[in-house]
Image (cartoon, rainbow, N blue to C red; front, side, top):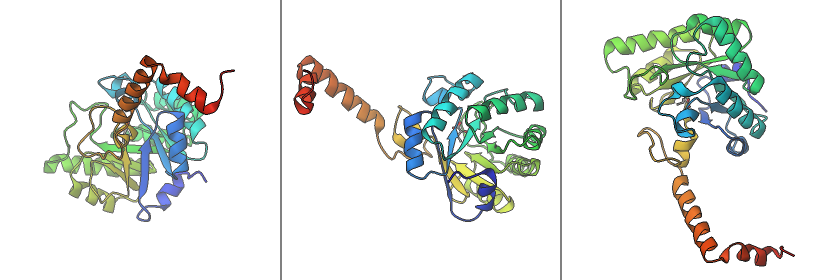
Length: 260
Ligand code: KIV
């Protein structure tokens, strides 16, 4: 059964929420089969799938394409779609952008930072919003942990408060000190989903390519549950070798008896 935004509010403090990103149909299908309650079609797609050096190159068209694919793979899972860089620059632009992501298959949208007016406007137009505080990749100068100084920690704390008060149903907290994440999680009434934010959040999110070990760099706070890049290398070498030796496709023709 697909969870709605209000279900995630109700789950605050109960069972931890496992969120994974997905960008393609077969991956989304596997996540739904595994019972992942919420899939994020993140603008990380630009970096981990499209080869850009920043999420800032991702467009609404890219997101519509990937959200559509994920929706076809996971018809019964809550999908959060990321609003790309500057498509949420003001309330009206954000509403038009969010409506496109919803039409493509998203159930809610995510946006970065302290855009309280935008969040209020979307929520007033029945679009559930997931906030995002801490490290904000669309505008950050680097990927270092943020919130280490007292002043910066207080700013993030106030931002989390503002995001909740503006009406967001959930909030991603990225790469902040664990004690800050713990404090915000205790203070806020909506679920916090951490990435590089320690164990005391209401849930955890991982970029699927990091979890799969797909690619050649994974953040230190991520975990590789598999080594998909090695598998692809092995498959490509095996295939190449069998084509060279003419083993393929003879080996499958013999197995399946096809070819007549
Ligand atoms: O775009 C994304 O995948 C994200 C995660 C890193 C949380 O925002």
